[in-house]
Amino acid sequence: MNELELTSADKERIKVEIKLMQIMIILFTIALVLLLAVIPLIFFLFGKRFADGWTQRGLFILAGLSLPLIVISWKNMVKYVDLRSGKKLKFETADYSIKGKKDEKILEIRTPLKLKLDLSDDLPPLLKTSEPITIEIAKRSGMLLSITQGGNNLLEEAEKIEATRFSE
Image 1 (tube, rainbow, N blue to C red):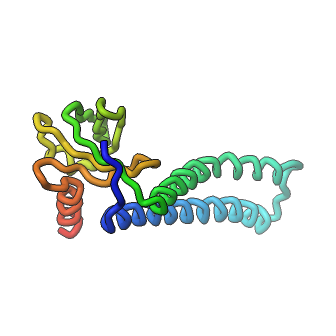
Image 2: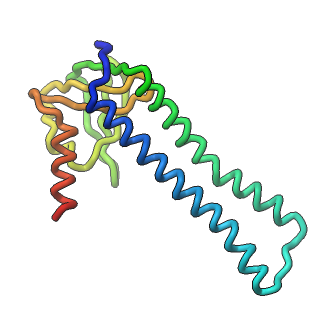
Image 3: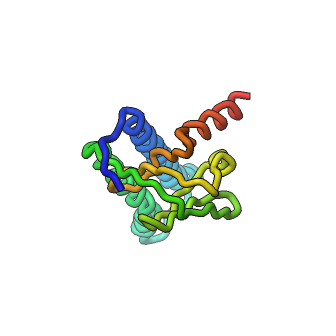
């Protein structure tokens, strides 16, 4: 297992992932605030009064619905630390398998690290399970940066397949 510097493509991949999560957090927060602002406004327009303690219950609900945002924000912070440190791990393994569930495919690596990585739908057909793969992951977050088999970065090929499918 080697520790290497992040390339510019790796840095760009991490930045895109962070931006995507930030956009999702912002949209979820806006939807949550609108939901909690629209309901009282509708009640006010129809002349209804709220029960005692409604505000406190609403704040508890808001806090409970915000917990997933804290988890996502923490994962983004770890990715940002990876971006700032500029380190990645690269290793080769032949001890892996692809497990499929309903809507997702998981790459399960047993040696040298025990990892479970989510794969896009276009990637598993590109992998030849009889051959070893070289994997690059971000050091702290474990974000998948590249999967190489036979000299080709299969993540980039899967992204090209996905891009052509959406452009049609």
